[in-house]
Image 1 (cartoon, rainbow, N blue to C red):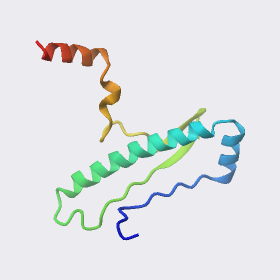
Image 2: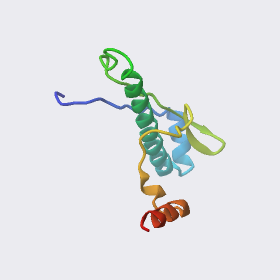
Image 3: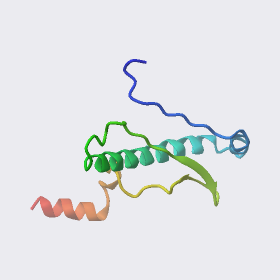
Length: 108
């Protein structure tokens, strides 16, 4: 496609998919994969662009991000572990006690 920016492919091993479906956790997996992949991709793209900014022709080769998923300890996760920084939605922190104090203080 002429206007394509990139592509993303997810491959789930057949035995893992059967086990997930059999345990009734398919929707949980779908939600977790979407959330974790978005966090990984966001984090890796920001890191790539920041590193490229320090080099001549740093973005000449485009950008890439990799993520893989594991099932450990009864929970779905990613390899490498989920990033703790990057571009994230701040809507989840709008109602924390610290945010309320900061907002109230700023309004004075």
